[in-house]
Length: 237
Image (tube, rainbow, N blue to C red; front, side, top):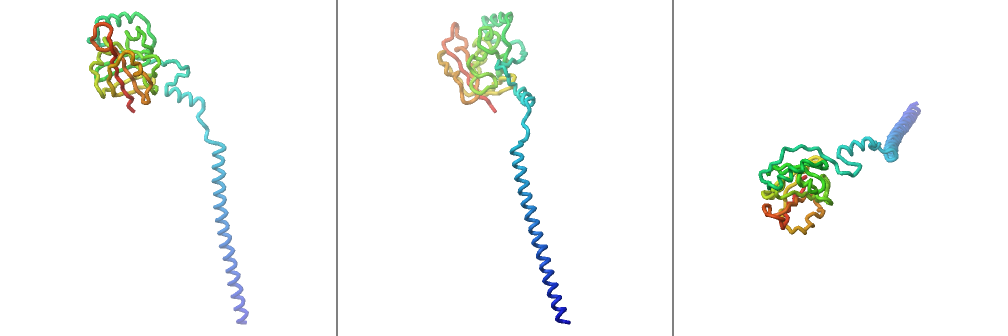
């Protein structure tokens, strides 16, 4: 009897061990299967993202973005509405004052910006193309140079006995501001030069975004001035 009981206890212990072993193996297999499924699901999700990427901006959204940075799809020069106070003509020559008054009777193209030198109290409309009329009315971008807001070198011409006579007092480090449809851009004077009229290389494109002011020199020369006064200012981020 005792032998039989002992055999039964041994058999029960063996069966219990087998049962526990199966449970342990089953749990391990389940855990491995769950891990494998999660890995497979993550892979499938990543493939789905690659095949079906997030939707891109619609054409309407892109149009709004273009408008926000003032892109002109026609490629034409964008105009800029600007109102300035009557110019301070205290430094101007009598001939330039007369030319300015006469220019008010003629129509000009729309201004493309407003140019200012705060320290010298200069604020003047910026026209496109340095025609006689534009130069009498304000200052002008020199054809072939960069437009306001573009990278490169924008050449700006003005008369030495008119708006640009204040350049006689310009200094290194002075702040120049060009405001256009692209917003205000600030430049700082880094170079002052006196060159021959044939030195057109000052208008060559530059690696840095810059503006180059050009006027005749000397400022109070009687007759056709023999030289050019150049101000180079570099864009400030």
